[in-house]
Image 1: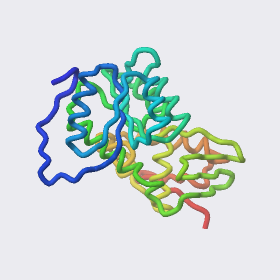
Image 2: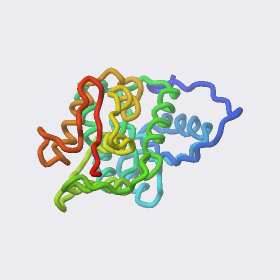
Image 3: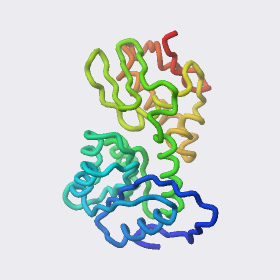
Image 4: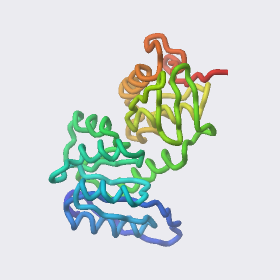
Length: 246
């Protein structure tokens, strides 16, 4: 156990390198060293930053596939760093913190994080979260289309950008991931459990209220009449469907 997490014994037998490039941001050099050792053993390429400022500078010159970002950084906080990273790009972010309050989780997700891991955690858990996030964000989208027009809303999946009536609308990372997954299954009802599992992770499969909140947020941002939606449709007691123009 090192500062809130434990490291499993790792075997490289039969392991295929992932080659994903991960930036670890933590002011504790020992944590960064252990994270680097574990991630590299799994085939990842690793960059390190001891502050939010350094992380932002690195991302300007280095293409990373994912950021592991500690929330409790000196100087520019993890939340502030997350917001700035998200303003300048769409790299997936997993927040690491010792805080477990619901408000902190919501703040992290609203700042643009894809996921949130609370200390103490095992590296096995972190690796599982990394795989899950990379799987969800691996391509321009998991859907065949890169661009979708829904009334006045235009969705550019490759750039992860949404404009409504010509004005850019900010979606949180989770809101966009939810829209992305529904767009990958157009005109098909996707169950609550499938959406929660694929967008948030298996530990969220029973959080239907959580899903409803995010669907309502999306409707307010892309539907002209959120209370009478034309595109983000509800199938009562089953799930949701993205009804695309025929």
